Image (tube, rainbow, N blue to C red; front, top):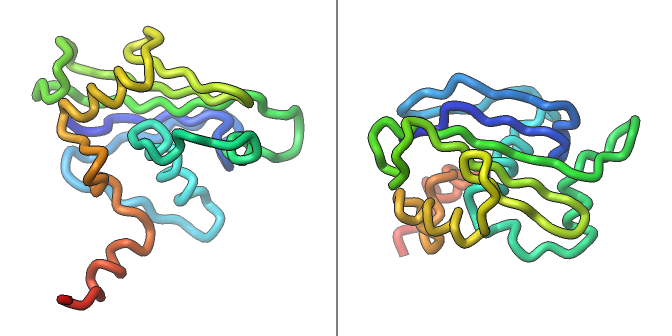
Length: 153
């Protein structure tokens, strides 16, 4: 199982729908100049795959919506398309699509275009090996340096 595609719209610095693909089955590295949206790309993935953005205050929710020029963005979404040809997710499909939509008051989760609960998504991810207690499937900026330079104690 691996990420095939990420679609972001209205989330942080991604106002217009942005499709990021292709991804490698093995390792992927995101590079770009300062201000190009690298950090926001990782926030978008975390937004769908982790509990990190669960209990948001209204101002925190607003900060996730694109705040640029033009019409105000009132909802945003991040969609992750997984290659499931190895069957790691217990769904009888070669491709699994997870989408999380955020508005000013609530979030909605979708699995293959069907609305589901956050718990359904978290349980599916855990069954595929994404652990809530050990979230190192996403290595944040600066974390590698921190781990590499940590003392043995």
